Image (cartoon, rainbow, N blue to C red; front, side, top):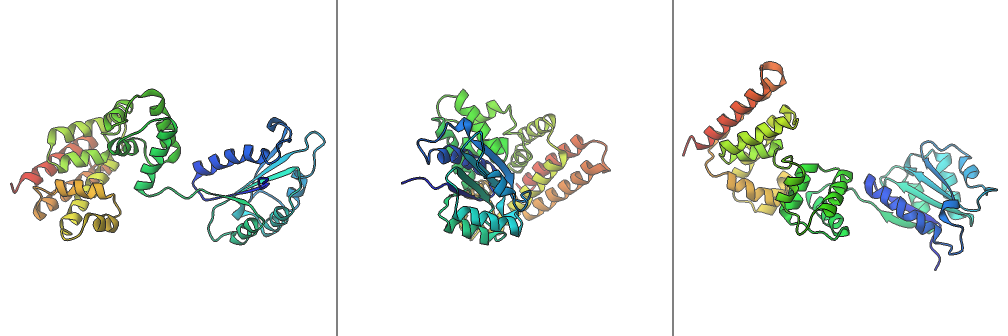
Length: 325
């Protein structure tokens, strides 16, 4: 059975959409085993919003130099009504020399066009957004598996902490680790490659302080400042950590999964916070929160030294934890 000359890629996850387009190009050429080599094919890459009425007819017209033509229409949901109508007509009667690849965000905008394209027999590729923590973990596992590598859960979490949530950055990091490491990728391996960045975020400073480990908290703070972490991000992480401990502490009757869903954080982190809860009282949390509020004002301009303000806040947090012991 011949492959469809029409491919519709649905979703807004940029990296996955780009990969789907790349994969669809040779797939389009393979629809005809006797087709000319891919290098001799005309490729037109256009945005739906930029297309004007009648332009599709021009780019899909047979060329004197090449008999094959691939048209990539990106963000088709942004096309004008006239262009959408032309796309629908082209989809229902695609010339033999044309292969059409269309991307669509998948939302309500331009939904009628998407329906028309799919009814015309398009091959659909879904690229759903990767937003949940577990989905990012799965993405990382898949990326590493491509390179024949595997990471434990600690390594995957450390990688997200070090690199962030952008899929392009995560994919590049996985490629680097797959090329340069042996064995299972752990948190220690990630830390080695990112020179402490994975361990020196504002959240790591908050974790060490809330656990009452003053020496480690100060070491993490100084490293975070040295690598350029914005002071306001550190105060934000401290405030969030204190607030989350308070929320978890007042919800002792709920299961880990229930609380994770309610607070919007991973279940493993709920367990971690419950361990941090030991040694904290309501009065201690209030004192720590006041110290962070003061530090936040200082780093935003009221104090002379952001570093001093943050160190003072960390010391007060640790003292607040142990005050009632």
